[in-house]
Length: 157
Image (cartoon, rainbow, N blue to C red; front, side, top):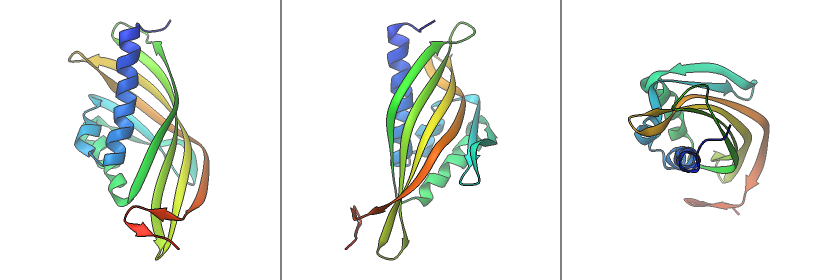
């Protein structure tokens, strides 16, 4: 069963805000997209591409997502999203495809783009009148590394 149009729009906005807050490094706003008791399960790339590390509650989730601060530039491009009604009232599930770019200068003058082709498996819950992420599992389908010729803050010859 598909959620109502207004709920699908709100869920789409929720996942888009996740990408935006991640790219802006607004960790507090990012954590606020989760319910207080949320669970985030992440891979341990590049060793494990399936979700293996579990973080519970906004505080743990915020601490885990603060790792983004160590990456100079990210760009999370949403590639597709599908939402379904959940098992009970005020719940929904979703599958979100994303291409996540992680740009850094590993050697002086040599920037690279570490690209993850990912899929989020989500459970959402209405919380205080707003949709929030109750559980998010991240799987990486593929990892590639690309050279970067030019990026803001640095010029590569």
